[in-house]
Length: 172
Image (cartoon, one colour):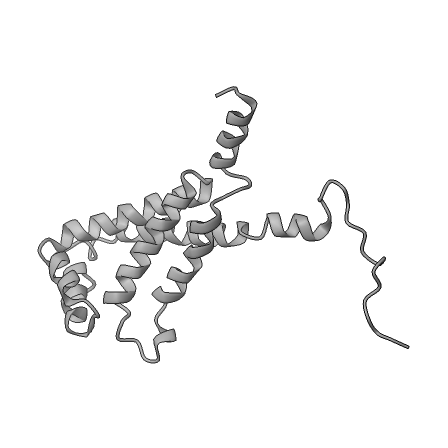
């Protein structure tokens, strides 16, 4: 008795809408929701935290950047942020908000994902660079999580998909 797979056990559907195909089409949706919600939350959290958007003091962006400067991979990047820590804090917060909203609604998803990856990369090279072992830092997994969305975008349940469908119909 052999235990091989029978050739006739799986007949593909002509419309390509079998359970595996459906699962594959929706595979990026949980990642999109997680990253979108997380980045919207992170941006709002920064904007509503009165201590964060200060040049100095407990919990401030300025003190955090000064604390990580010498342990970062690119101290010059931290120095640039320290020229205007409050402005940098606002830029990060609004950037996270824009990335999160774009990712959630699927608007310019690849660009939003690239923005999320760049934010995650900059935070990995500065704030979490000193984490040992490296996988304890949370910014590197976020950077990797953005990669599938950069490559694939948001093919379903998105503004991008609706605009694409509208263009195909010629009603745009």
